[in-house]
Amino acid sequence: MFKKIAIFAAVLLMSVGFTSCNLDYFPDDELNADLLLSDEAGAEYIMDGCYATLKDEVEFLGYASGNTYVRHYTQLAEFPGDNISLAGKTTDPLYDAMAYMMTDGLKNVGTMWWLAYKVIYMSNTVIESAKEGESSKKDQLIGEAYYMRALMHLHMVTMYAKQYTFGRDNAGVPLRITTASDVTTRASVGEVYDQIVKDLRKAGELMTPTSARGNKGYPSHDAAIALLTRVHLYMEDYDAVLADYAEVLNGAAPTSKLDPNIGTYFANAKTSVETLFCIAHEVTDDKAQSSAGSMYNGDGGGWGEIYPSNPLLYLYERYPEDKRYADLIAPQYNDLQSGYFILIPDPATPDNASGRQNLKYPAVPVGEVTFQGATAVAEKFTFNAEGKSYEVKKKVVNGEYFEYYVEFGGETLQVRVTKPMFDRYNYYRYYVKKLGYQDGSPTLCSPVMQRWGEVILNAAEAYAKKGQDDEALKLVNIIRTRAGIPAEGLFAADKMHGYTSVLDVVLDERRLELAFEGHRPIDVYRNKQQMDRRYPGAQPWGVVNYDYDHILYPIPYSEWSVSGIAQNPGY
Image (cartoon, rainbow, N blue to C red):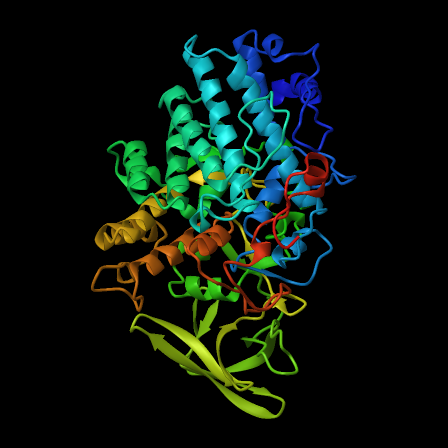
């Protein structure tokens, strides 16, 4: 896909100032939009150029390898959250995002901003020059342009501005709805969101349910309407979320929109019924160590330096048959060793304030050992540390699932007992398979920007916030059933598994279902919750409050130094 655009897109991108970092573009007068779009093929080439721009490597500030929009977006959207643990500090600028140590000169922060506005400019070219109503195909292409303009503005406003829940009048990002803009200012958050809603509505009108072209790497009518469920959820317009949900569902059963096997879904995202829009990659697009998923997975030459966090693993391990855990998270066992090991979060003490590594000790089972997922199961284990014997005790929670805990270092700590595992600097390797294994390659995938699993959970959250708890739990159960969780693990008003709030149920289910897809930081902060990162990993140990300035990414130096727009607070 997107091969025929090569020469055309190269000329187009030069014409829109592709070597410029600011937003004020000056197209070449000799290659104007009217000429480019004199026929239907021109609009098609430009839109295909948009999709190529999201995945192709580009040079920015002398940095090219792995410098793609999709790699930076999947990392910058997820890494400030509490689903991930970094196994040792890295020189990659992704560390700065993970550590809330961003600066306005970071290459990933600047590249993502730059390329998003390139796509917006290209989309505006199609919107301004292609005429509606001449053919269903041209209307589809114009609809794709409105969709891409909305999606890029949404990415920008959620990452470089405060969440909508903090107020409509806060500084947003530059709003580009014309190629003729000669002044750059920051629109308000509310103005940006209002335009996103308008663009998605227009996209939904132009793209009919039957006019989509090709695989899920192209936007569609359903993708536009479904994205409104996310936008209205962020805007706290819950009636609109449910209206959007009903519209895009169009009378179908929610289960019919889900891939039957979540364990193989991501490797087949381009063609799955569940995908609404992905950044489609071909075999020739495999960037190996520079791919979007290489930090999560060491298989096939990836870096494999970022693992699921302890809190996320504990949440999955309540039901080890959960396919989102059993099929998509791979513990790296060391088969050359035998026995069992107890993994303990290094306790926080006055001499070890960070408390951020795992400690490992040989564990001796008391009773027969079985396995649930990666966890060895016995009634009790013992281990010795510094000449003292400790007991690892099994605790049954709510009569349903168990946890192991130990009194250690003056604290009661939840722990894990496992077969011997490979580690990196005492961080035990759990590879994540969500961003790989397309066409058999561990480092190739088509990263999903929208899918039905999220849409269903958007509706569930809207129901929960409207107090319609039964409806919210029904949708959560659809997601859990597809994941393979047994009937005893489903929810009902009289079976809350220890939760006191249906909203907390929904938010935890979002965490389980959408992990590593770029939703968790936004979900935590827009709900005005704290991000608790007190678990093993090289990321800073502590709790991040929802009003912390560095939740927002800085406006890149290459932008504000040219256009003069205001920088975000704290930078």
